[in-house]
Image 1: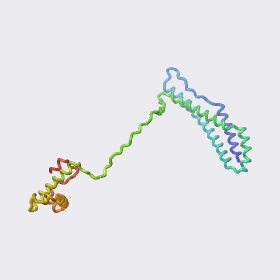
Image 2: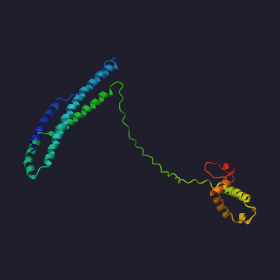
Image 3: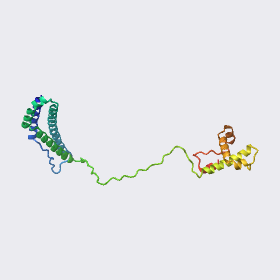
Image 4: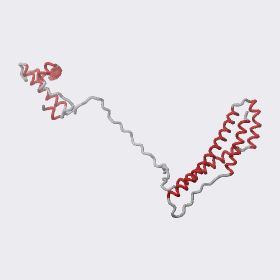
Length: 234
C-alpha cells in the first residue's frame, strides 16, 4: 500500500541531494568608487532575481517531500492491524536506508540561509528604507479608573432658585387676572388662605382654551428657551 509514497520520497530525496550538494551564495556585488546608484541597484537586483529562483527550487522540493511523508504517515495511521504488521518491516527498512527527516531539515536550513542573504541584498539598494521593528516597552501600562458619566433622563428641570420665583410671580398675576373678571378683592380669604386651590385653578385656567385666550397675555409660559430675566418680562 505504501509503495507509491516510498517511491516518491526516494525520488524527491535524490532531487534534494542535488540541491543541497550545490548550495549557492549570493554576495553583495562590489561597488567601485564612482559607480552610479542606478548601476549598483541593477547589479543588486540581478543577484536578488537569481536568489529568488533558487529559493523557489528549494521551496518546491521541500514542500513536495514534506507532503509525501505526511501522506504516508496518514496512510499508516489508517491501516488495520494486519496491514500495519505487513507495512512495519517495510517502514523500518526504508527509514534506515533513506534519511528523509534529515534531508528535510537540511532543505529548511538552506532556505533560511537564502532568505537572510536576500534581506542583506535588499538592505544595500540605494534609497531602500529598511523596515523598522518596534521595540516592545517594558514599562507597565497605566490603567486609569473608569469615570461614570451622568445620564440624562430626558426631562428638563429648571434651577431650584428660579422655580419658586416663577410660580409666585405667575400666581400674583393670576390673582390680578381673577379680580379683573370677577367682582372680588385680593383681600378675600380665598386668596390668603387657599393658595393650593389657587394653584390648581391657575393650572385649569392655563389649560382651558377659553380662559387661555382671555389670559394669553397675563400668564407667562415657562419654556426652557427663555432666560431667567425673560421669565419676568414679555
